[in-house]
Each structure stands twice: as C-alpha cells, then as structure tokens.
Image 1 (cartoon, rainbow, N blue to C red):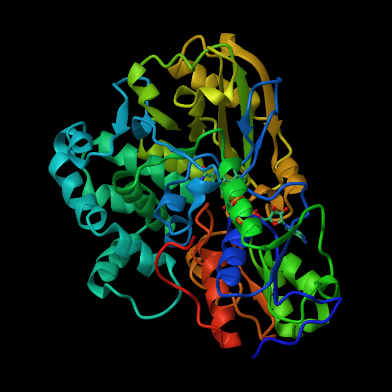
Image 2: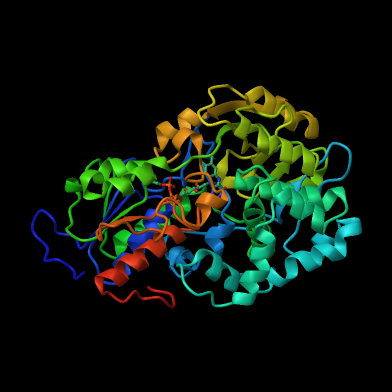
Amino acid sequence: MSTPPASASRPFDAAVVGAGPNGLAAALRLQESGLRVVLYERAPEPGGGLRTEALTLPGFWHDTCSAIHPMALSAPCIQRLPLADHGLRWVHPLAPFAHPFADRPALTLERSVDETADQLEVDAARYRSFVRPFVERWAELVADTMGPPGLPAAPLLLAHFGVQALIPARLLAKLWFRGRAARALFAGVAGHSVLPLDRSPSAAIGMMLQFAAHAVGWPFPAGGAAGLAKAMAALFVARGGTLRCNVDLDALYAVETDGPVLFDTGPRALSRIAGPALPAGTRARLERFRYGPGLFKVDWALSGPIPWADPRVARAATVHIGEGLDEIAESEAAPWRGEVSARPYLIIVQCSIFDDSRAPAGQHTAWGYLHTPPHDPRDHTALIEARIERLAPGFRDRILARHRLSPAGLEARNPNCVGGDVNGGAADLDQLFTRPLVALPYQTPNPRIYLCSASTPPGGGVHGMGGDNAARLALRRMGVQPRLAGPVG
Ligand SMILES: Cc1cc2nc3c(=O)[nH]c(=O)nc-3n(C[C@H](O)[C@H](O)[C@H](O)COP(=O)(O)OP(=O)(O)OC[C@H]3O[C@@H](n4cnc5c(N)ncnc54)[C@H](O)[C@@H]3O)c2cc1C
C-alpha cells in the first residue's frame, strides 16, 4: 500500500486512536518515519494508564492507575527516545520490591542477585541459578519475547525461558525452591499476571518482572506516572505531531486520514468503531475476546509513611502482601470463581518515600489493590486496610483521606478496562500470544486497520511494545522503511 494523497479533510498520513503508552509509542514510531500523524484521545490529557491526579486532598498526588515501570525501562521503543529532554526523570527506590510477613523478617528483592539470594536461606544457590542466565542477557530476552513476531535472535535463550515460563507459577516455584521465602517472593511477583497461579503462563509474567527487577530495577517517573506520558506526548508534538484530546472517536469515517489507523482500544471497541470496514468473521472474533478479573484500589493521603513493623519494607516502593505461595495462589484463583479471598494478595505502592513531590512536607501518599471478579460492585476498603494494619500497626491512624476505585470506576475512566481488567484482557495461553487477531497479531483483513493496545502481544503493562510492533508492521505494509536503531533527537 502506498501513502494516499492528502486531501483537505484528511490531511494526515496515519492516525492513532487512544493515547495510552501503546498509542503514544505507535504515534512516535509512525512519525519518525516521516508520516504526518494525528493522535486522538477521549480524555482531556494523554496517558491512559499513565495518570497522576490529586484524588484525595490538595497537594497529594496519586497515580490513578500504573505507578511502577520496569518494562518501560526495558522496552527499546521507549528507551531510544530522548524523554529526559521533555522532563522525564526516573526514580529508583533502594530495592525493587519488598515482601513482609507476620511471623518472619521481610524479604527485599535487591538489584543485586547475591544480596537477594543471601536472604533465601536453603534456596540461595538455586535462586542464583534461576535468575542469572536471564538477567545477564536481559536485552536479548526482551527483544525476543516482546518485539515484533519473527525468528528469535537468541533461540536457545528463548527456549530456556519458554520451557519454564509455560509451567504454572505455583508448580515452577515448587520445582525450583524448597523454602517458604523464595517461593513466596516468586508468588508475589507472579501475582501481577492476574491469573490463577496454577494456570499457564502465570510464571512467564512473574519471571519477566523478577528478572527485570535485577536487570533494570523497578523505577517510577519523578512526580508521578503521568510524567512518562507527558514526555512522550511532548516529544510527539515537538516533532510536528497533532494531538487531539477530548475526542472520543466513535466511527472510522471521523478519522482525518486515508492511511493506516492504529487502535489503542479494546478489541470490542475496535469492532464497534470499524463496523462494516471489517469482515463479519473478524468482528465476531474481536467481540469474543475474553477479559479477566478486575481490581479494587484505594489511594491514601497519609500523615506519615506506612509504619511497617519491619523497617526493611521501606527500602522499596512496591510491596507484595501474602504469607506464602499457597495463600497467594488461593487468593489469585478466587476472582476466577467469582470470589474475593478472605486473605487477599495485595500490591501496595509507596512512591512518596522516595519522591517528596507527591505530598506536602512530611506527609505521604500510597495506594493498594486486590483482584476482584469482573464488575465486582463490593467495597473492599476495610479488608485491604486490615491486611496492611496487621503488618504495619498504626497505619489506619495515619489515613487523612482516601479515594476508592472499583472495577466499574476504572471502566468509566477508561473504556479499555472492561469490567475493571487492567491488562487488556485475560493473559492466558489461549490469548496471550495471539490475542484477538489469531493469525497475525495487530493486523486485520482491512489493510488500513490495526489493533495496538495491551490487548495485543506482549500484553498488559506500560512498555509501548504493542504500539511499536503494530506501527512497524503498518510501515512495512505501506512500503516505508521503519527507522529502527539509535536515539532520535
Ligand atoms: C490501577 C492500575 C495499576 C496498574 N499498575 C501498573 C504498573 O504499576 N505498572 C505497569 O507497567 N502497568 C500497570 N498497569 C497496567 C497499565 O496501566 C496498562 O496495561 C497500560 O496502560 C496499557 O496501555 P495501553 O496503551 O494499551 O492502554 P491504556 O493505557 O488503557 O490507554 C488507552 C487510551 O485510549 C483512550 N481511548 C480508548 N478508546 C478511545 C476512543 N474511542 N477514542 C479516543 N481515545 C480512546 C483511553 O482514554 C486511554 O487513554 C496498571 C493499571 C491499572 C488500572
């Protein structure tokens, strides 16, 4: 397909619908190859899951959605961009994540493999063997697991990863480790898969996040997650891109281009917006796409930091709560049965310990969430706060204000979060690698229409790789050579 001549009403060469991290990455890649690109966003600001707002009290800044970005720091499509010139500064907590327990000292995953392994008693040597091969070749692993589909550059490394990654997380933890500590540490990170830990590929997501913690850390943008979106959007605009916010694009004819249109939306939304421009079979497949559990999140304005009983927990901005592998596995199976565990696995984020721009002097912000069944209407605030109080006596007394976000609230803010699913759809084996467009991820039978959101490989998280991969495919099909290497200024 060649670039069509621009008309007055369609002055752009390509369009992107949705300015989440994947939409921004797609727009930047298309633009870099010389195309005039328009980017539509229904919200007043770009960012999608990258949003920082004063949700509670004046002067307290909360990350409404994502907060911690190891995969953005790993993703070549983001790392090659000169985002520091547009205000982005990464903050690295002392340790990537912590895992407290009621009856034993907390664990911290340290950047150093040895310092982490030394906490794992009987499993110290096994831990080193588990992570080292992948941490040492992290960039190659990222390229082969998250880059465009094709022949792997490091096939043996990928095979070594793949045979383990396809084992469900609970079994993999039991195969590798003997002790409670190492098993719990891995369960805490595998819980980010939002899958039952007895289902594949829960281990794949846990492994990637755990290796990333050693290889690049678990950092966050100074000032809040929105800093990453603002820097990407500012770069796009500075290079001549057109960003149209407050535009809820609901029909293909409204797009100001005759060229490719990349959708950073859910598959069902793409089906609705594209309508008859897609064959009925494709639309049916998009509409059958399955979503996973939701989440219930509380943001707190605090008079002081969370008073963890074990002060080592304050070394990290991310904290996983769950007393062991089996308890976390039970918790993560429950939402798939329509339940919330009485002892839920929690993810807590406490960036303000390392970033004093988040709250007035001496005060703090934090958030915590648990996974729920999709569309779950219940308020889980008391359960979440009681769970933290056990490990941090006095926590409740420090709460100045709170903001609750339910699955329905998440979907109302961002239609991509269907039923409160924050990963763009169930990341199980049927869907993770192919997502909705079975044969050719990103591409539809209509050569103008692409899907590029977290509902495409490599799935949820802030990394932009779905957007970048889709944009590269669109450029190739237009006969435009993507510029692939090196920083672009
Ligand atoms: C509470 C929470 C915590 C999270 N924590 C983390 C974390 O710490 N680290 C991490 O890596 N990930 C985290 N995530 C997941 C991460 O935010 C998402 O996976 C990621 O944002 C997906 O990026 P995306 O570009 O595909 O979609 P989104 O970020 O959802 O962006 C899609 C954008 O498209 C816009 N849009 C949709 N339809 C239209 C339309 N018709 N017209 C115009 N615009 C449209 C939406 O408004 C939105 O801005 C979290 C998510 C949530 C909700």
